[in-house]
Length: 320
Length: 175
Image (cartoon, rainbow over all chains, first blue to last red; front, side, top):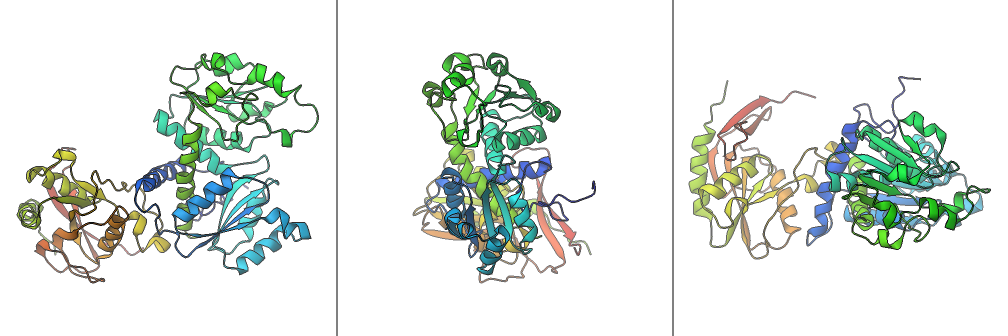
């Protein structure tokens, strides 16, 4: 149905949940990036906390493991003065057989105001968003292979911080794209923000062919993929999601697609190198590159907190 | 009835009023956005230390009490204080003082950066209608406006810093 409203937006077109970057208008993305800029400066204050979510309860629901994302969401929520409850959900109710919606109903009865959800099943955050009370907000912190919208937004913040303007950029996303929800979110965001050239670089087994339908240039050679790039986004080789023989070996992958100083030299001289983490040194990226002058991997982590503050405060301020 | 307020004449009065409020080591902090324009021009006209960029700008966004109903204000500049405020005499500047809620929010914002020695407030127009126990140390004009009217400062659009000021009065439409 063409007329069906994007479930993330209210009737005024304001963001009430963040489930996916796909389908969000450019103005919504830009406003989050602008708001994140405000929150970045909160880190420089004596009091690194603002009261926007005071009295609100944010539940971190991570059905799948994560340290960095869960921690940065927790820090972001605390800097907004929310109370944060971390549930080790994989080891508790779910293991005892409780359904996802029953878990949500129980936590809602504990007066949750926001759920931050990571789940191995694509679409789980959508299901939750459809069943929560109107005042409750949901943020997708990664669902299956589908989307990781806050990572996409923090990547956009990082690119804008270092490159200012999206309209002239060549962005190469390298590695295990088929398993990567980060890659999908990045591609949607880059497209919406007007990046003219997006390349997906990797072996045929890891770069899905349907990407060209999304306006992405598929490159199976690293040289072709990196040449002249302004931004290189390296992805982690996701061994835990691989079934069967998609790759000969990690060593073989590094030889062909690992980002070494020699391959990086093909990009623009002022290219930036990004990675959502955790990095595998010597698998997808050389230590010399990860720690080198082109690398903005650690700034990405810092920006991630400000971007998550922006997302949480934006959706919390909008009514369903 | 059309209200006639000569913003330029009031600015001249405000300038002298603020001059009287300035203790040694005082700093100007303008409340975004109208107050920031005023602070920018006062900084220069009063020849305060630190040069043209020596004044601060403060935003109420992160401390507003209507966040729950109105959400985050878009397009608001972040607070920029190019000096340590600990022990300083801070003179807040704004165009219009009305309910006092913005002042409450920016005072909270200010204290996130340190502990000033004192905070005073100077405004172009005090339009009454206070909802909090807040008062200006100096107001160039005092008048009573009905709650249905919105009074805001505008700056000449030529982009010239310190361009001419004017007031606009609009009727609030019921949403």
